[in-house]
Amino acid sequence: MFRHPTRRRPDRPLTVARGAAGAVVVSGALLLAACSSGTQGATTLDPEADVTLTWWTGQADQAQTILTGLAEEFEELHPNVTIEVSSGAPSTEDLLQKLSSSFAGGTYPDISYAFGSWASELAESERTLDITDEVSDPDVGWDEFSGAARATAQPDGETTIGFPAVVDNLSLLYNKTVFDAAGVDYPTEDWTWDDFRAAAKELTDPATSTYGYAYGVSGSEETTWQFWPHLWQRGGEVLDDSGTTATFDSDAGVDALTFLRDMAVEDGSVYLDQTDTKFTQIFASDQIGMVTSGPWTLYDLQVAGTQYGVVPLPAYDDEHTTISGADLWVLFDHQDANREHWSYEFTKWLTDPEQDVRWNVVYGNLPLRESEIGSPEFQAQVAAMPGLDVMAQNSENATIPRPTVPGYVNLSEAVGTAVSEVLQGKGEPREALERAADRSDEALADQ
Image (tube, rainbow, N blue to C red; front, top):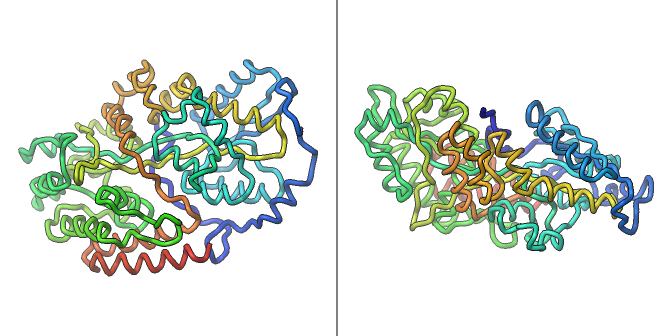
């Protein structure tokens, strides 16, 4: 039996209580004061001492039930450990605000689910643990996580604030019914973006309102994160090495946006979705030939009875680079050696393949580690949702992390606006990206 994946859409940067800089309004001094109050924690490790951990899962319904069961199993293995499990907030999107207020009051958890886009803000709170030394142990298998997932857990490039919790990526989904009707060969893993553009043009039929491709133009993070693989495959970067200056308006960025503009404006082969939600429904009803999406789409396609296939993203210069929306289990510091030890031990255990196949895999998400792909649990999900195996293998192409700097909220909005305007024929690629870069630099400078 397959279920709705826990991640249905790319996470959007949240609008929470912020100052003009866009950073969460919690001062370091306040945090330190809050942390210093209350009961003194253990200064030396006693692994046999009774310990109570607080875990905010950010989940609900079946996902919450699965995770609660795993926590109870860990408690049976370690009778001195009690794990208080809750969702932490009314929805996952509310967790960042809840964490911010709990920092001020000293009531923050030991472990919390977090969208990857929050990583830098959480690290800057000065409340996270640094488990870099621990995950360097070969027995942890840290290198088995995708490059993007590992980088998301290390927002400053050095300090590791937690473990990957959920991973996904963008792949190319194609509608076999639309391809067959147009007499066009199905995409392959060797496709280039030129192949993609040519096919999209052939699939487009104004008489039947059929489009070759679809792109969300709401200006949201959906618009932006679909653009990043085009930039990266051409050798471009979102930010400079310091993370303080936007560089997406480079020639690589202009070429990438020009390519998409030419498909949308000159070829007329792109359905431009103002809502970000309609295009998968239209794809499922056989009026769009191709979409770039992730595992959260497969359940709906199965329900609709859509005949589809999945391949990696097309390549530019043999690079099939994709984007991964890796989320995290973030570990927090309570100045207590025993809580620190067991928070780490539990999270390491939770993300081991033996447990992950009973959490992410059984629930319909992608496995955290490549070694899980051959498991009976994952193969059962592949049978229920064909293409999930291709998406899992595509994780190897998720080599570049999406930025997690606090200014990413404003940067994403600026890029999303630029891409949306250009695809709708309301601007030129270079000028639009340069304006977006200027807006982004202002936001980054305020951090």
